[in-house]
Amino acid sequence: MMHGETSQFDILIVGGGLVGSAAAWHLARLGLKVLLIERGHLNAGASGQNAGSLHFQIERRFLEQGEQAAADGARIVSLNRLAIADWRGLEDLLARPLDIAMHGGLMVAETEADMALLAFKVERENALGLPSQMLDGAALRERAPCLSPALAGAAWLAGEGHANPRILVDAFATGAQGRGAVIRVGTALKALTMARDGTYQAVLDGPDGETRVRVPRILLAAGHWVPRLAGLLGLNVPLYPAPLMMSVTDRAAPTLPFLIQHGGKRLSMKQTEDGNFLIGGGWPSRLARRADGSPDLDSPPLVEPANLRANLEVARRVMPAIAGQALLRTWTGMTCISADQLPIVGEVPAAPGLFVAAGGSLFTLGPTLARLLAQTIADGAAPEELAMFTPRRFAHLDAFAVLP
Ligand SMILES: Cc1cc2nc3c(=O)[nH]c(=O)nc-3n(C[C@H](O)[C@H](O)[C@H](O)COP(=O)(O)OP(=O)(O)OC[C@H]3O[C@@H](n4cnc5c(N)ncnc54)[C@H](O)[C@@H]3O)c2cc1C
Image 1 (tube, rainbow, N blue to C red):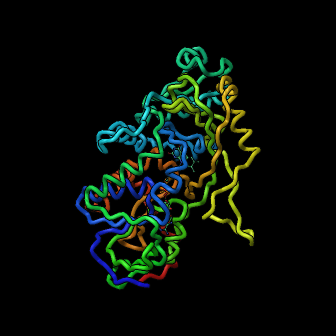
Image 2: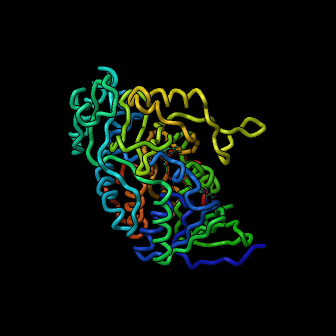
Image 3: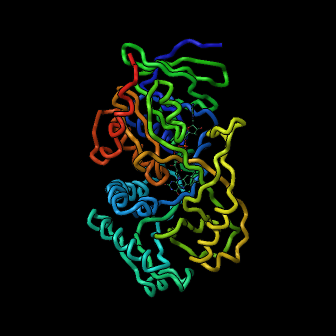
């Protein structure tokens, strides 16, 4: 059954992950009438599956692609500086404890080659105002005695850390509702068209059947599903699925207050408030496939045993004592990266009023990008930190799009 069209909202947000719910919070606070739809339950996607790392040093995925990629990655540092301040203020902003620990982060080195790469990174970060510093082996052992004595050193950044991915989305969503936002779960965007007057007509599929809404603005905050949804309008957003894995051990007495990453290998490791160790760092899981062999982006990816073993082995080399912990659970999740590895955030040039926000490490950066994007959507502001993430850099992909 199709219910009547409603046009009472200023914006439709599609996706109830961190980006969508944080944007809803900010937009509602700025006075917009917000409708957020989520096809499953809130936090069902990457926002509820991730490692919860707050990493503000340039990520290894930029470093491993050579100097040019590292230089490109360095452009994100100005945003990372804002993100540190945002995370420090989040519990006050949302008036809720969020299990945020920001005791600092170590990107460790096993070899002299790792050390050289980290020194290159630290130099770039310092030039951009991010006060990371190199620690030699002795200084590292003094700061983190639980780590392997064989490590060559590390890059240190105060303010890095971790937070609990299971509570942040609820805090933003509840706060948004308190400011008048309407949130409909179990409701999927099914069809989307642009009318001649530039408004968007969306067909929503929810518990009560199909409804239509007409809105002047729409934000696609649907993670790795953004390309599919932009495709409803014949538009192209170059985001690619990245299926990953995470593992958790049983509890131990507190020994590791810091976020651990690795300069030369894939690793993230931290100890939660409860004492469990979380181990990840970008090790791929395997995309599920449909019967015809095509990738199935709607089903959870599958654990890849060889990568799980390799991930645990890196963790053990960095912190030998972790070999004494039992592995409780390994899970998979899907995130996405863009064609140039930077998030894609802003208005799509070919479709005024259509905004996208996805790609990259949007647990760490999601609250900040959502805040900046909300200012753009509400006031047309153009914060300089958003400029590098504009969808305009991929406008050529929509050169053949046909819109009214
Ligand atoms: C295993 C793993 C570890 C990670 N670790 C980190 C980390 O440590 N630090 C970090 O910064 N980042 C990390 N990330 C990345 C981070 O989790 C994501 O960048 C971030 O959560 C993306 O949030 P989002 O709101 O854009 O997307 P999502 O959380 O994926 O939310 C998108 C939502 O859109 C909904 N949706 C899809 N289609 C529709 C539709 N048609 N209609 C309505 N709703 C729809 C989905 O159901 C989903 O809930 C990790 C990711 C994974 C998978």
